Amino acid sequence: MIDDVFHDRGGCPEDGVLAGRRAHMDHLRRVAVLMETAAVLDRRASRTANAAYAGVLRERATARRQTAELLRAGLLVPGRPAAG
Image 1 (tube, rainbow, N blue to C red):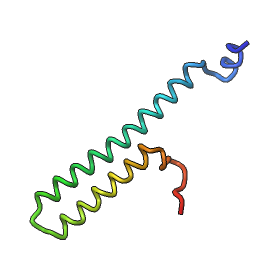
Image 2: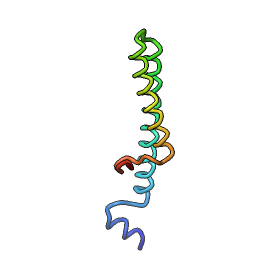
Image 3: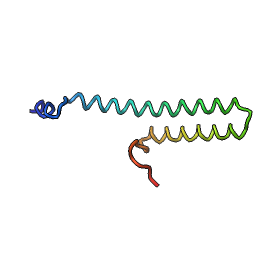
């Protein structure tokens, strides 16, 4: 009976599990990219002689770390509008 339901929908129970894992991996990948980008921005800031430019780069790095933390905590969900 359960098999009939899944076959009628064009999938199997494993499809849902795999989709969930894929979504979780995509979520972790976004967090990792944000953290890596923040590290690159910090390195660029430490190498420049221009204090104003270094400040902007550090602000951008901080913003990316904050976004990564919100994503990690589940407070920022892709596709859902931000509060405010």
